[in-house]
Structure formats: C-alpha cells, structure tokens
Length: 125
Image 1 (cartoon, rainbow, N blue to C red):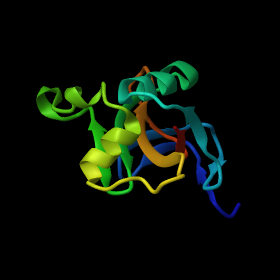
Image 2: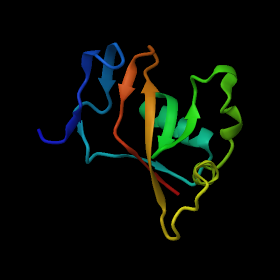
Image 3: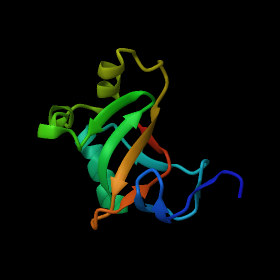
C-alpha cells in the first residue's frame, strides 16, 4: 500500500471532521486531468461537471490562484483569466517554453458540504 493516500475518514484531525476521498483509494501516482486552455472559472466548472465536486481553493506550488473562503469574494476578478496566464501573473515568472501543463492542487466539497481530498490535477494547456 505504499503511496496510498486517498482513503475516506470518519474523522480527520486536521479538518476536525469527516473527509471523503475521490476517487476512493487513489495513490500519489494518480492524477485527474483538466483539458485547457481555459479560464479559471472554466477549470472549476470542468471539475464540478465531470466529478460533481465544488472547488473551494485552487493552488499550484506556492501560488494560491483562488480561495473561495475569502471575505467579499476577493478572488472573483481572477475567474475570467486563463489559468496559465493567472499563474504567471501571480508568481511573476514565465512558464518554461515548451511546458504544456501545470500540477494543480484543489480543495473540494461535496454538495452536502463534506470535505473531499482529490489527487493532483494535471491541467493541460
């Protein structure tokens, strides 16, 4: 079971409540794929439509691209930007020439507002 990290829990000490795994039993090698190029809102909508999950936070590396928990919806203006363009703007770096993907981490919830852990998302643009 080396690398197994996606198991549902009745109680998680960090979130202080239940956490669902999607898909159940995923490993560090598993990835969900989102095809781009697309805007941040389209990225979020693809996850919602394909996997039936509400995205609450989107990040890549040390760059937080979207946080739905911020007061006043502070990141709403970011939703129409392209994902890779937004990353470059916030990180203040250019993506290496020839690179066609970003490894994205997202926090999600079910429709019943249960926390969900998902594998890394490979965003291809």
